[in-house]
Amino acid sequence: MEADKKRHIENHLWDLIRLTKCNVTCTSVLRTHGVLEQEDIEELYASILNPIIIAEFTHLPWRIVDVLNITKRFDESENMGNEMLQLLAKFIPLDDPDLCRLKYQLAVAALTRGQEHEELLKRNLEILQTLKIKYVENKSVFSASETLALEGLLVEYLHEFKQYKEALALAHKTFAQQKELNGLNHWQTIDALVRVGNSFYGLIFSESIPNPPGAEAMEQLKPIVSLLKDAHEGNLELIGKDINWTNSIYNLMESLANIGECEFAAKIVNDVIERTNNGDCNGDKRYARVVIKCLDTLACMKTYEGTLEEALTIYENVHSKYASLKGHNDGETLSAKLNVILKLVELEKLEEALDCYKNVLESLEKYYPNNMQVIDVQTSMVLVLAKMGRLKESWELLNDCEEQSTNKFGHDHPIVKRLKSHPFKSRLESCVKKQDKLENSEKVD
Image (cartoon, rainbow, N blue to C red; front, top):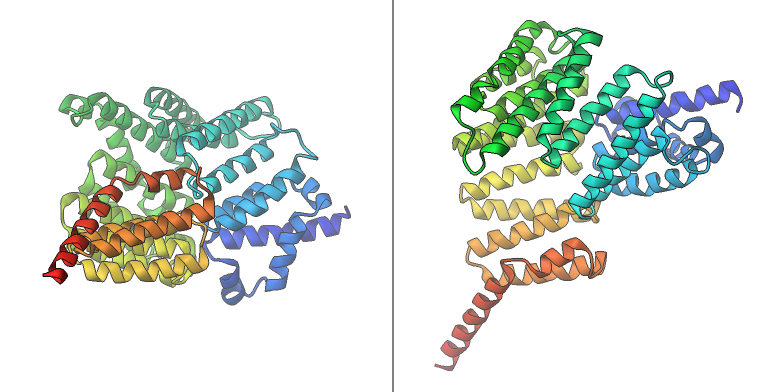
């Protein structure tokens, strides 16, 4: 391929990735940035499926699918990812890191189809372990930081399998290596330290089940907690100036909140809001995202404390920020609205919750018809209707949901099987029949 043409294509492809990574959809790229026209975007998508181009840029497909997953455009990520996977397999070995990463991103997209969670986690873990081996084998090609980043991802997957001892050992190793490579006051080192804290807390929590961790066990966490707090206080000036550090501070805050250091975690949220001007750092949308995530965690803390009205207000703020950032019908905006609705249900504001559910469902069916959230919202509405005493409507909606899912996914799909055996189904049916019988007897009388 000619050098100039290759450079032109790569620059445009990276424009697409960079702009979408800033959490704007292709449509809003047009309107907000004016960098890419719609036909340019379509051309880019077509270009990456060109065998000549894909052979030159094997590192790009998995990044594009990653972006589509982040923006919850799972239909596109799955369709495009599978096409790119078939093409890539013609040019590179099946265990090539770029191909493995693409498989990993496709597995992420598959989770939204309701496929067996455990099976997919195992598949992803195998892919990541293959990747790790390839990175170690190709030290001349793949940097130490790339290998350490992958080990960090492996730690998080080990958490999913509750393999906390293995996770803690690997987390300690990557923390020591990051510290040696970058020093203690580096965002990647702090992220590694967060994983140590999360692994250790997961271990002591799992060993104490069904009781909470004892005071002696929690005492062992103190050195890690102290390091995390010091990392925050020592790097305050970087919040709002360095996006990597700002993201790491969020990870640090979330870890402290999980451990139970909620007061300090709330202080970090306020620091982030203040130092990013409530997410408005010279128009950089990435800081707005960090603020949103911080507020989301703060709302979780308020829920845990039992202050539901405060949690509701914060969730409404999160939804408003997502709507401003990404539009009312974006997947993440709709997910944020669902958090608002959950609080409305907990506060017994059922009529308002039901109306909101209907609005969200309408958007999901229009823009994300194959997303599993459609079914989640319908089954949530089933419970709300039942709680309101509208049993017949609840039962009918559950049956409709099962029928639609069967038509869409087939009888053997895991989500269809779960709907058929829904614990609420037989009880609802029994109540509705009793209600009908009572109504008919009253008519006869």
